[in-house]
Image: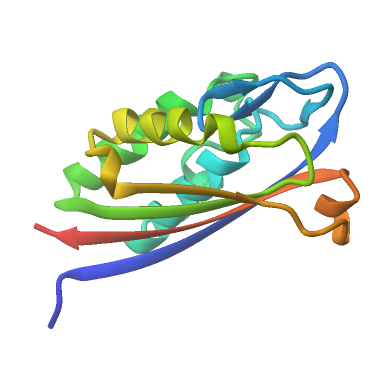
Length: 160
């Protein structure tokens, strides 16, 4: 029996005025931000769900419920650190993370390396174990119509 486990995470948030756009802990210049209880960092939320799912530990709603005022407006980066610590406490190490953000705008390519570094630092990983990609949906669907941003992530973990 193998000690490898894989998890998938998905998140989506609506674009809104009056909020900063934060992706992987990086503030992205844009006229809109993401609506949510915390900082609404869709990419970190998808990564956390992928990691928690791989270890069969539930999802971010279980660990950081939006009904808890302690998480109102909180940065998702310290929550990602907590997920990393939880996995280590359960005897898992992260092999790699592959994440994709779906956004028609703004252009994210200039921010990808900073996003990768933020995730790697939060999870105490070599940056080469973290992949972040950005794509549009060619004007299709709610992300293509600039109504929201979505993210998918896959995480491979190993039982120590």
